[in-house]
Image (cartoon, rainbow, N blue to C red; front, top):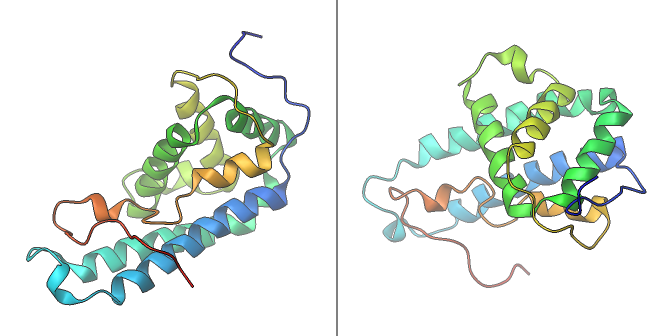
Length: 173
């Protein structure tokens, strides 16, 4: 074990991975509601709201296919996901997970590559492991994985130059 790895004393559960995935779905739904409430004048003239709504829905459809398979994730993989949470900054994992979700949701890869939560998270682990580790993070894996999902603009749609509405500011009440 290198000095940049931490020994994992607890593992993640199927329920915690389920919370991660459903949390991502909730963030996508909330983002759509937020964008729908924005005035038309703040959008770029080339903005295609129907296309972005379909993009969000494609992600939600994919998540709905993953959820029933979460309980099939092997315990060794849950341990490996906990290791990722402890050894990689959330921003690194978030970038990889968003790329994988986009590939799966838009059909950019064969459907069988991501047909279950086990296959999806296997790809996540492989891709994150190709990245440079930071120093081990403080915290429990179950808390750290929730940072893999951004509540504001979870799919990074606001970053697209054809959107123009920018990241949300303020508070939800």
